[in-house]
Amino acid sequence: MEKINARVFRQYLRHFERELDIQNNSSCCCGVTLAQCHTLMELYDRGDVQLNILAEKLNLDKSTVSRTVETLVNQGLVEREIPKQDRRTTNIKLTKNGLDVCEIIHKGNDAYYREALGAIPKSIMPNFIEGFEIFVNKMRELN
Image (tube, rainbow, N blue to C red; front, top):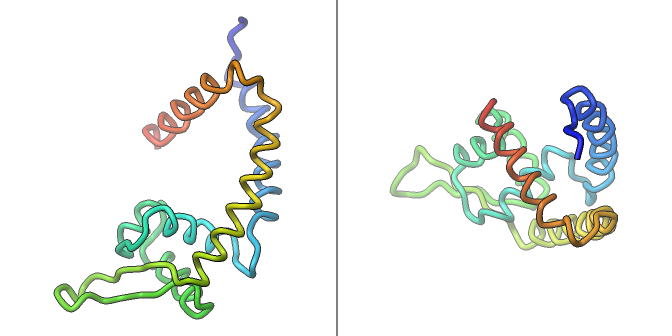
């Protein structure tokens, strides 16, 4: 197979980014923004997590995540807890309503991506997923 060069790949990547942006904007429902959606999904995956760890995982400033969490608290989607043993930390977790919103977001996105991934032949799917994982990890490493 002919090797794809970086410029051609970047062209496909730009198209992918535009489609991803459209999907991201339509996938966040229930009155949450994309940033709030990403925060909810991270909490869904991790459970109870400290604010500073959440900021690190989202690759955002602690103050930015704190503002996002504040809005989600006001919407009743997350709870904050300051442990008595260490008053300098803040733990964040989803409420029942937050879990319900995450399930709705997951359901819609799972259906969309299941259909999109359905275009990839089953015989190459494991290689596609493995290659994508390697690519994303290398991008993280470079940043």
